[in-house]
Length: 318
Image 1: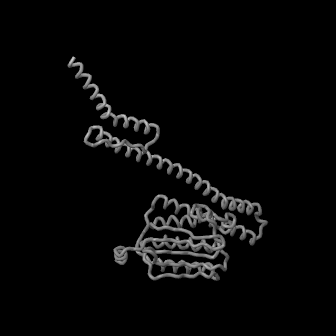
Image 2: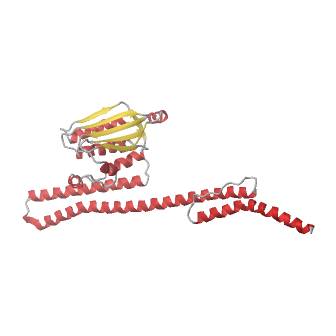
Image 3: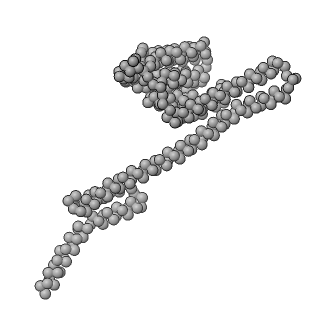
């Protein structure tokens, strides 16, 4: 009888204690079920680390955090891959469309010239050949732009050394004045503004931004190029007084082949890649490019680049 009473007492005291000590395992089971259902953010409440169950819970939480991080990374990688594939598909389609236009023109002009044969006058043949040459130059420019973008997609290195952004801007403005002599193009520049950059590529950024302003504004409209140091960075601004853009147009303006006015831009020989190239070159220099514009108020494209450090400038002088 004494033994039976002792067993009953031990069972009455031991069973609740066992249930309490094993309750974290039940929580672990509930958490595992929730994670299996797709809730990867669930974690196990930490029992005291002094117990075996507490140390097990801590180890499981660490493992779950790593699993969630790996799963999120995989999801993001798949999303980026799908987005990249979609952008590549659109890029190839746009490139094919843009190349088809001058190719069709060249083929049509060539066929027309052959049909004319010896009956065509020398002046007419010269006119046709000039048109063929114009379309061929346009096609070559498009191919060059596509090759450049492909190079920067492959992270081709730049030939960087300390250069004066103001001097580069001065040469770009001088060239633009020669292209459109009657256009008021003003340069406002601090001297010097030294950046660690590839001078040739930086000049291309300027040429593309100034060319964009000349192309999309009336011939008498002023263009202002400003170079200054601001907030510890070099800032280049190309501002015009043209028709400006809407907020939706501005959000797409650095995309490849994007045109705010597709008919006008194609008629003037644009490829829709100039601003994309400027953005890619700026990013390759660890800089940023933005546009401030409103309809009827013109557009101001701003490029911000890191200033060259003292050590970089010294190395460049050597």
